[in-house]
Length: 217
Length: 215
Image 1 (cartoon, rainbow over the protein chains, first blue to last red):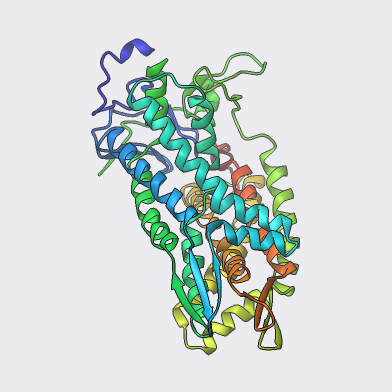
Image 2: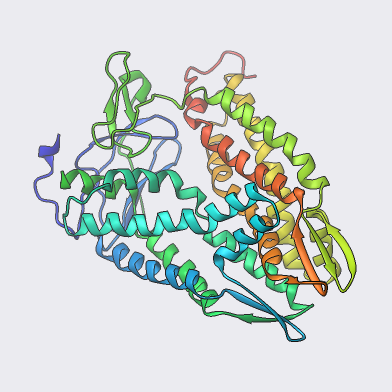
């Protein structure tokens, strides 16, 4: 089957050339999907599920965006997120501080869930995707690419940076009436990170990554 | 732009073809033994294991936790000596009283409506699959897709509590600590997310022949 793909350039990956027959993961219908032109999406003809897409820009665009996201994520964690000022009394928190505060208040389970969805999960997604993209982009057989790729797919719904951003906004409104709020460098980095990460995600397709991984072997 | 597949073809389960649950590779299922994906090494399964039983179990657990999640305070605050306890609903009421209607709506939808509708949607999907219903398959698949997508947004209230507890630590002047309700609420979100993940939407399509009695 691999022989079907003769030349696969980095710019235009022919997503379905390897697997002319595709089975829908939501309704189990077998269908023949034509090679997708860059910038197009294939939907299941029976149930309408998103089968896969062939985003423009190959691996270069998502790699560039993910490198930006990596940098912003480090900044968002390294610098203070918000400082609360009540008549000169100040208290500062970082991104990890939210989870840490729950741990200190004897809510270990809650601390674990918040820590995983706001720090550990996103870190795995951002660093993992960057690593995988770099390996695929430069055709390097680096260790752990397959493991990381399947982890990224599995942990996708558990990275909740966007939900946390909404939580930050709600918390700011709640606190705004009782104290002065000083946004930190971390908050600006975090806000930009949301957009860069979303942009990166929209230029990525898991099938595309797996197809280029198969090429690598 | 959308490109649809050229023609309708038989189903994977009949032809012995299935997409790998991890990497999506189309795999031919041979024999009855354990089979692993040649590309990513994951265990190949025609359907998610014990989908109906697992989804029910997680849903019942989530429904039980929904009670303490709403009854117990999600946080306790002491501001200038006056103590108060907040539940999910009192958080919504707080914003309504302060004229913050959009925020009250966001919290109400994310924390009250979404978890409830998610429970009901999954129960409906399970019952319809168990009754071998053949109607409205496309709509039910779409309902499943939406359920899977919106669940994570319910975590917003948990994050608000975590942030407030991290920031409002000014000793006797002002102090906020997370309540047991927050843990219960987070467990509802996590349990319903696992329930949605363990449900297999292909079951909706597994009873192909139009049933003689459209129950």
